[in-house]
Length: 464
Image 1 (tube, rainbow, N blue to C red):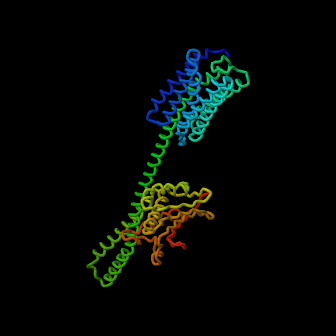
Image 2 (tube, helix red, strand yellow):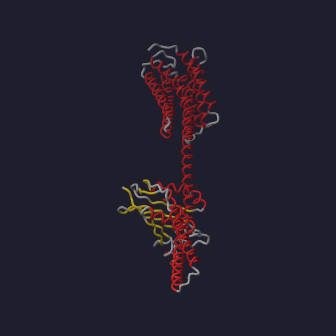
Image 3 (cartoon, helix red, strand yellow):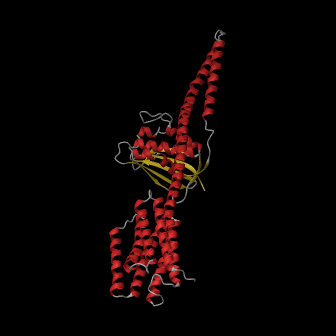
């Protein structure tokens, strides 16, 4: 390798270490103020140390030996403190100051008192190498924790610099190299190159850590926004479906209930018409004809109502029950939190899927959970336990609350249209849920749990 002018190289590397940290500090002045300041001050200390090394032949020894090496140790210690702060493991600066003062004291002892240049140089090389190794390990921790490419590059270059310094100390201690920082040997040239590269990679990498974090936060924010939009869309669909099904359930029940008296009116009218004809009385024929015609029209209207309210937009797809429950829990998170209502879920070890319309299945879950919230009012601890399991070809989902349960007279009618135990209820929620279960070739049963509270059990055909 062609030897370079090391004093000049040290001076250039020092200028890089002065310029780059200031640039990084200006860019990150609004991000991580403490760690940013520690990192940049450490860079400035390293830059000053390199410049002092480069001026060794022109300036006094106290500056180019004791102060220069003290700054060279202080630099990685400050940068290590910066990375520890980013790892939420802050380090008291007083210990860094004491370590630096102690290092300088031992260095002065070897240099000025004992005049052992080999021990002085090797001691400094090993201590500074250890400081860079610590810095490298902290960068590795950030790289592993945050999967940061920038931190991994910092780790790699400072590890190489640490190994190079340690090797230089070994070579000097064994007598293979001169105990001077500006020796014209191959390893000295390699170290100055590593110093220049670490100036660039270290500062750009530190900046990259923050850029990667900002990108990650932006990505997570976009994902969260997408999730909220999807939850909002599903919530709107369920609410709209709930309203339509409530109206539909009422209309269907009315159509069913009205068809019976309407048929009776038609039969009574027909019988009266027959009796009058037997008496040869035709004075009311046109009225009976109008009654029969209007009764037929009313029956046709009820038939059209029944056909109209039948679901035509059901979309069946493969649904994971665990995911459907998780989505519904997210929808009602604010409600359960405000009500201090705890929803516990027990899932099977294997994924359990069914063929269902996600909106309608979510509608069942919401109806049952809302009923449980209302049923547990007044309880010290309000909770609902959702248990999912499979038996044969059937998937079971049970909802057990810790409320007072159903009264004996209510347990037989629960789920019937227009039956409700709520003062302001319409009695269509569970009835709708039963209808949805039947539409999915399943069933919904309501009763009391042996351990207390009400239990609603949904059964659906399981998919393999």
